[in-house]
Image 1 (cartoon, rainbow, N blue to C red):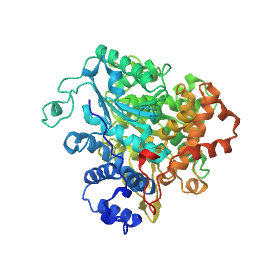
Image 2: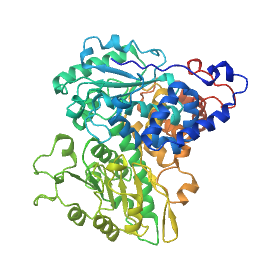
Image 3: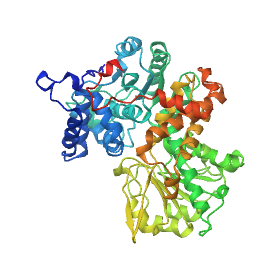
Image 4: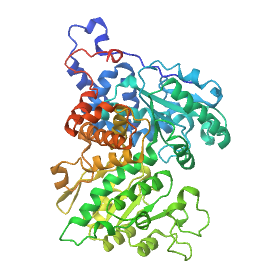
Length: 546
């Protein structure tokens, strides 16, 4: 067991020699300059981690004020490298590691957490599939820490209300097992039956120790992600960000992208109900997104079967269809019934056959969308929708500069990792970022504020529609499919309202008084509940007193 060891330090506790003349706003600028002097993103991550330990109020204030700059450092893409190197860059205990060797006394381990009475949200991973980087074992704790930093900055949850957890069930990555600095168990992952009994004990212990806590599952292996979400989502306050969060954020982006592609009268785009989506990648994220996008079509009046017929899926063995060998359980729902030919593996050939209006990448295969593939999509569609969503950059299917160049600026684009503005033939194009950080903070915030007893599919859909509708007129005029990241706190508040309303419709909200508020009043209530770090012009409060 590793125990989170955050010290409640602040600038007001600086040595007395500086007490009179210390200027907090100047020190904030000093800190930013120190950060920007670092040569690599990983060095910046390590520096920010140290800042969070020394002065958490300053860390969170700067994070909130510089979200666009800081987010790629505390979250994707840098958090991927941080997780891969976690045992080597480790400075201090942070978060809670619950080991398989703790089985039988998990409740006792959980009770060692110093903020038991304050904890409201836990991000739980087993490190088995971190950002498509593979089985990182206990090094995966970094993803829980990064997600919770965004809950704090993006949704205004108090730092003491967050609980990062990694379940150490071993690792099958020999590199870590033979690494003398590796922090986790030096054993292969426990088999499925042993993991299941461990998970059952863990979830029941979480409910007993933290009865109001919301649990977010993160980066479990594909099969286990679906299995444990299905096993627990009606018993506990739990959701899976890889399946539901990804599905929600992409539903929102696709909703806006489809309206752009269909709504340009000069280009004769398809009717909304006639869009066809090709998924390249059929893991937990891919199938989760595909299921969520079903609602785009059913909300237009299509039946479930009609909606499913608009979606094609591709895995490492090619087009998924009934009768093909090696189609695992979670993929069978979208297996095509209208194809019975030989296996079709080449992506360009599949696109020529399907003629999709939208190509979505969740494969973690870098540069999988080649120039030929992208040009074919542009030839088939006046405004091709291409969403390469794999994180980080090293796993992204297509870069934004190439997407603009190969489609002559026609592409409707969003990626999982952040790209900058691209200029092409004198026109500047701004990309969207289809990142889960747009929705999971609002899903968590809304679920917590209404005391939802479970996170329903309607709540996830409500988050997606709130995100889709959150764009400003300026953002729509600029052709964006997602709001700009600098507005994430306002967006999270609007998403929280959408989540609360759907929880009320589903009857899973325990805080019934919120039903009395109209939407404007509910939004004000949500915003009032969001925590903001102290002003840098004054000595900072210690976080233990907030």
